[in-house]
Image (cartoon, rainbow, N blue to C red):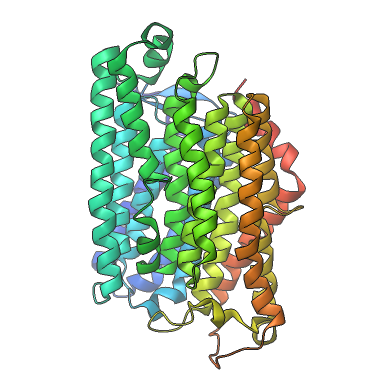
Length: 475
């Protein structure tokens, strides 16, 4: 079948990234300087795909015989995935040398994972979601264990693989039951026939299994057990990608496939979503308090943030979906910034990851202390930073959806989380340094952190414009 030039332009981000992957493989095979070329080549590829997605956000179309949607919300996600990956590559330029994973395939795997994320965000068919999920997941399993000489990395990779494969089984079985009930894997067909199937036990069981599978991917309680160990054992830059790109991709798949089912008066999944939202928020916030390793602390906070975003799904309205998309955009850059600073401070052999290592950081490096403080305030949800508006929009959607109690639990959880975020700021500014390590300069890493900082500030300045843009594609 021949495709029009308009369809070619609409999938140009996919073409840019796919071509970049093929060229990267050739560079890795034939160039002796591939480790130096690939990070910058990857950044160019990601930047081109991300900016083009943003420029064509208003050009909405459904292509590939109804399998893929471009423009609108998917393009916003494409920008988040690509720009987040570009920041990860910038952070990795110097970091992977001291981590011991100075391999060209590191960047190729990041490119492949982003291609999988993009397939999930624009999916109009359940099989497209599954293909995107597997492409992303397999890349992540390899990235988690990139340094084969580290036992922690081997453990992280194996745990991620075993539990990830287990979660994928739920997704596949869910798709099978949905297909058995709806006789189609097209999301539009399933959505159109939902009122007639809202009492079909097989269909509801399929959707529930699909949701459970993705609850693993977004790290929601009680499907979170892999998160702390995987984040701690993986390279810090890759842990940042897992917690942002991976989470955003999983939410984008849920929004693409199930959001229409959650809207309207028949919201049979609200109790399930509300329960895992409450458990994720409270468990993540409370357990994070007891963590002494900063990567584990950020891992548990990631579980809590998944709970906040699920509030938007439980609300079952357009305000909730718009709030999730804004929250994911803000969370991506403030969490990448936080993990970026951790990667800059981290020493050889995974040292300086204890919270006490951050004592007196304001004297050692005032700029890093200031930037980390901003990211901690943003993650805590303090105004006027982007994190505050992300939580505000999902809480407002809960009020509009008549589940105000869930928003109140979210506020309580946020108040608890302030403690462990502000604790790091107190250590940096009001405690004397207990160790004499020096922080190695990394121009690329600092640039990545500053870009993340600027985006967090920008999203905090113009949240209304961003949320209006997102909402315009939902009406």
